[in-house]
Length: 574
Image (cartoon, rainbow, N blue to C red; front, side, top):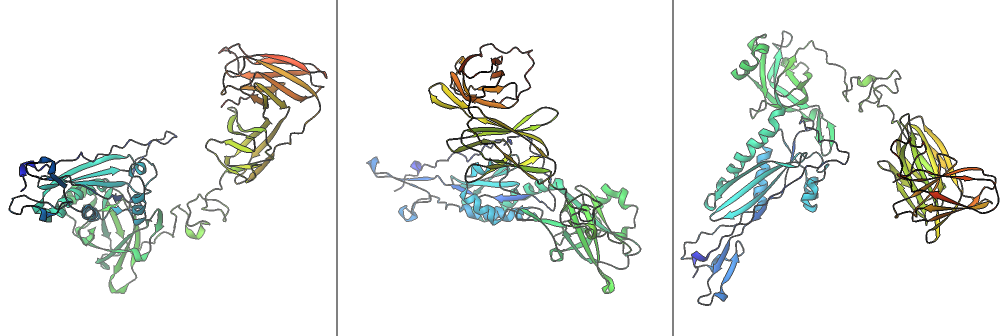
């Protein structure tokens, strides 16, 4: 016998999704969204979830340890005492609710429903991760989510609508439905979803009316109008429409409400010369965008076609004038007729060269190929301008591993790791510097064979590829120079950079080092070496000619004063 007082109906916590606004790493703001007939609002109905948490407790008699608890809807009704007045509710299938929401969304002809490809992907992806991605799902603007809860003797259905662009819940609603009134489920859903879809599209809707003149007044067939958008979205692409995409429309007398709001326009014409356009469901609104109208005429005369544009909030005129000469075809709407457009499907500016007229300008970008990257070489690429040098890329090859840091520029590395290409560089002047990387043979002691190389490059036209080859590091005869650092580099992130005779090309840099041994130093060299430590005065060492091994101290302990003019030579600090 069931003790109804012991039936425990628990309510689970509400399914709540909190979504933060995603900011692109560049810091740009999300732009406002405009819906058009070419790119209408796209809604995806995510799979609803069910939270049926009702428990039924069966008494085990005196011994409470023999009590049995079953959770709806897993128990078998035959296990219950049928003489009791217990009301049992069947779990509501989430797929049924999702299907009804989909139908309710589809009632609004201006809204598209996300395709099967998106559905398949969402089934396998992490939902929260998806919504935090700024570019997913492509062309999807809103996502419906929802849950079904069983509370006492009724269902509670929660609906939430998420704006993908801002990743906020822009609408949330719920309604209750008794177990015994399930037949009203679709009506309840329509009452919630219908107004919500209208709220989304209404700011982007306009209406249209057909106006005739003396050339068409006696020839037009008001019941034989067909309209199609010039372009529409198919999957993730924008496609042109064709005659097969025409849909039938009808006309009716202008409602009094339009006379009140647009009487200043309509009063200029006879009331018999214009009629409001609507579909056969009496929907007289169009999404903003470009359309084409085809009107059939009496006595089998050739149909009349004209393009028109709908602006939201306006009563847009479609003037049927049979003396009207349609403009020449312009498939890409760039203002250049197809017959004169060398690229009729791609938007482009005018050009006196017929082969370039209407075509987009060539890409003003080029590539630079680094060659002969031997083990132990470091390198950098800088762009030059009147405002100063800008580091584009730096890297090194050490122990046959090529390491690159190129910021926003893409690179393509050859399989043998001895060359790579920097892609998509803007036009301009560039400098490639390279130097030898020190080798630590003993703790704190770095050895270096003196080497540096430099190349000037200029990208002066688009889609060009330039080559720059690093010279081979040939060991030359010479003396040995030993430089002691004061202080020892504090940690592995601190680096000392060596320049030769104020040359802007760095010869090497060292970290975790107390001394640097330069082998193969020219015996005929007479001049200065410069050691740079970030934030400190540059150490200057004077070297005289000679063949004997020489020792020097680089004093790097004097902090740099703020008013000291910075040296012109570039720095490699990371």
